[in-house]
Amino acid sequence: MSALRLSPELAAWAQLAADLVNTRPRPTDPPEKLSGVEDVERLLAASPEPAPAVGPGDVARFRGLREPLLAAFEAEGVEAFAEAVNPLLGRGAGGWRMAPAAGGWALGPLAPPRPADWFGAGAARGLAELVIAYGIDRLHVCAADDCLCAVADVSRNGARRYCSRTCANRTNARRHRHAR
Ligand SMILES: [Zn+2]
Image 1 (cartoon, rainbow, N blue to C red):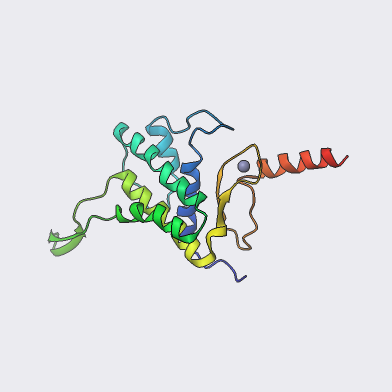
Image 2 (tube, rainbow, N blue to C red; image 1 turned 180 degrees about the horizontal axis):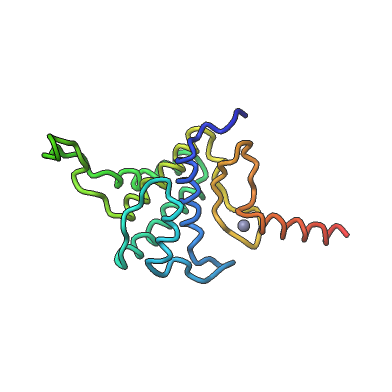
């Protein structure tokens, strides 16, 4: 397998998609980790592009992105993956508009997308570019059976099985104990 062709920006978006999905309450980690504007802002701090300002009304919309993004991580094949990401991709840009600007005319977005739509499109694009370049195997669920975190593997060799070093170490320690 050749070295990763994905740009650092797209890799960051794919990672952000996993980060957002992993704020969800799940059996292995029940607390809600996206409860307020500060949580969304913490997520956006890792964005490779300047992030729009978010307000209290955006929090629920960001939470609403988790289900379609999780469906993308859990997709069995590329077609199911495309079905999950296409609605998110379509909500990104709202068209263009030519308008007078300082010193002449300029093209600008018709209306800036809502922050959650902007984020959803960027995250979906990162995942889609990863899958197009490397295949659906790059998206999976953490190999630690007590975790259930989504993993977007943007590593060079595509051998990332765990969401974090913590999960890898915990699982290896347990295997070691079992072996003895
Ligand atoms: Zn994990």
